[in-house]
Each structure stands twice: as structure tokens, then as C-alpha cells.
Length: 212
Image (tube, rainbow, N blue to C red; front, side, top):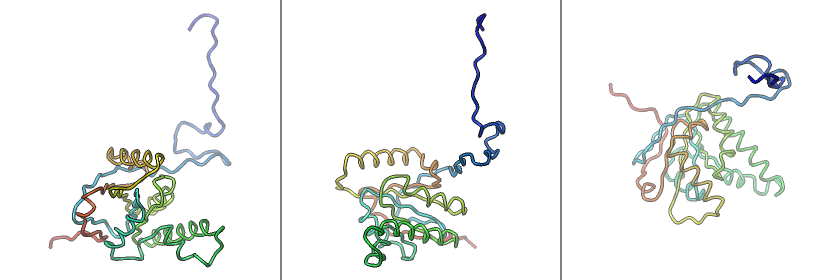
């Protein structure tokens, strides 16, 4: 240290004065630390049969949500497991005002998903957008309940997208390919695109069979 120089001081926030451990609670009234739900992510390959454990949360994100909904509706036997904002809006249409529709639909969807997760029932959630903020609360709830979490990126051919959606889709595709979606709490990830979509004949939720 040069002569005449003084040691630099570092200001420590009040909520960090409890010690070095990240496990220590913050002071009362301080900001809540976000729960870490990150996990190891396994990238699945398209196949004729896509099987997950019962009680799983499967989030389907797509460049074309209507085509994704038609795809899973055709393959999933348990229709009560299928959930989406358009489906809930349809149930509420005419029962609430247009001004309240989106808020009431979001509330009803969140409650329905939470109830199935708490009951260890399968949920197949069709995301309306590509934004991680939309799927975040659902995967967080499933992680807290200890339920399996999976994400599928469904990319049919010939879909026109805005520049913003193209960028969001490209980023999601890159993160999936790199196995980074474990950071969001997803244990497996799968991309279905082009011809691989037609190869899938079964999407089911059952325990793997065991040889006697």
C-alpha cells in the first residue's frame, strides 16, 4: 500500500450483517431471498412414445399455441389434465365482464393448477407465450411440492412470428439445447419440430413397468 493512502471501506447493507452464510435468514422486513429450484436437466429425444411419471407437470411452450393444443388434445387421454388460458377464458366467457376476463381467468387457472399439484395429479399446461415469467409460478409450485417437472418446445413448420417472438424462440431453443432449462426448475426438456412432431404416437403419464 502506498504511503499516505487509507484503507477503502466497504458498505454492507443491513440485511447482509447476519453473517456470510446464504442460508441465514434476512433481517425482519428485509427482502425475501428467491427460492432456488434449479436442478439437473436431461434433454430428451423425440420418440414414438413420450412417457412421464404420473403427477408430473408438463409445460408446453410453442411458436403456435393453437397447434400445440390440438397436438396434446389428440394424444393425452386424461383431458382433465389439460389446462390453458384460452380454455379457462372460454369457461368464463359471458359470466364475467370483458374487463375482468383476463384477471379472473389467470386466477382460476393458477388455483386449478395448484389444486392438482397439491393432489399429486398430472398437469399438462399449455403456455400462451414464450416468456419464462408465464411458466415460472407453476414450475415453482411443482418444485415446492416435489412433483416432476418437464418442458416441451413445440415448433411446427411455417409459422410467421414477429421479430420479438423470433428472438424469444431462438433464445429458448438455445437454452434448451444447452441443457440450461434446469435453471428454471425443469428436470427434462424436449424439442419437437418439423417431422419429429408426426413421429409421436403416444403421450402418457404412467409408472414404468417392472419385470417380474
